[in-house]
Length: 436
Ligand code: SAH
Ligand code: SF4
Ligand code: F3S
Image (cartoon, rainbow, N blue to C red; front, side, top):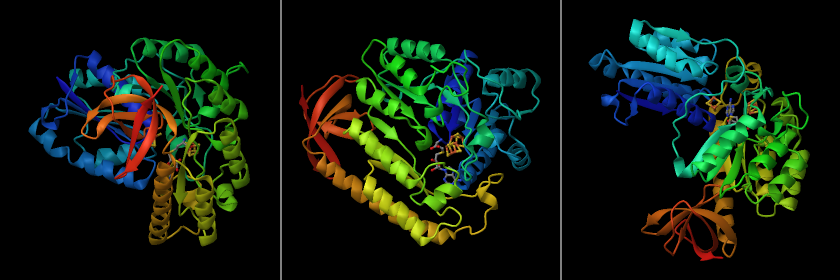
């Protein structure tokens, strides 16, 4: 009995697929990468932009011939797209061969759905309208990608940025109890994981929904970083409106906390930020960046940008462009605005032409490529702590906390941390030597 899970979307979904795997393995299924060989195929879907949804629909369509060849094959579709308004009906209508559809609020039920399908052979469509708390004790089969383990800290989102569908498909913010998170981290460290990435749509609002005022993100970071062992804690994502100096000082103080901060700005124009309901200004954001760099001079800062939000003028776009030049990010993830039905921005006038969006995203990508290249050159001589991955023809491959690949001219032990100094940037690759 074999299974395949294909994941679309963010890290949250990647981790949820590990829970789906865990449930299938507890039923006796084993993982395969061959579609022809599998008895269960799961698509864990995303609906953040229309392009992703179209790709998923195409991929589901392609499963038809597999189902024809093997009528016992179970096809399950879950995740954010299944949860979004009307999508379950759409999937069912377009692809009547799909067996199980469920949403984001009931993934812990997946095991039951499979058992029910096997015993009754009837279709199961179960998309819950509302979230129902937090379900601990779900089996997890971890992917162990470069020794990283994902740990949920809060689910859902209360922010309702006007372009975004996440609050509609993930429900309101719910925080896990600190003790549950810490126990999970302890176990992962004991199992040998070197990175633990704490996950939330907005990690900075962790604990806001719990009564105890001492439960907040800074305290959670302190507790995790005080555990015994050789590991690093990472986290994502930070919302600029909630990032406190206390959190930044904590990151600066504890060596086991990665100095990597993903801080999405979305736009550099105050008019657009207001219309996006982001609740901060360009000026406040730039102050945050200075504050971070004051406490953590070597912080790796990345961002998300949306171009072509309704009403974005050339001047608004230039504000975004100049902000990127000013901050000189280590990483920029830029997206073209995509209309999501049910969101406020979908009903706004002044939607922007696709050609204009393409032109703007192209300009941002060129800018960010140039900055990355400049920063790589400037990094020569700087020191870094990295994890050893594997030997390659370019040297021993290591990875920084931010995911940067570097090659060291030495033989290392995999899965251990080393201090290195960057020595060369050539052919778009960074090279380094070991230091103590
Ligand atoms: N919770 C995180 C990430 C949310 S989704 C945060 O608040 O930052 C990841 C990114 O997708 C967002 O940061 C945003 O840049 C982008 N995004 C969200 N909705 C979008 C839309 N409708 N069109 C284009 N990009 C979108
Ligand atoms: Fe979406 Fe905004 Fe929530 Fe992030 S904070 S998930 S962009 S609504
Ligand atoms: Fe996509 Fe859902 Fe994540 S919409 S980006 S998978 S929260």
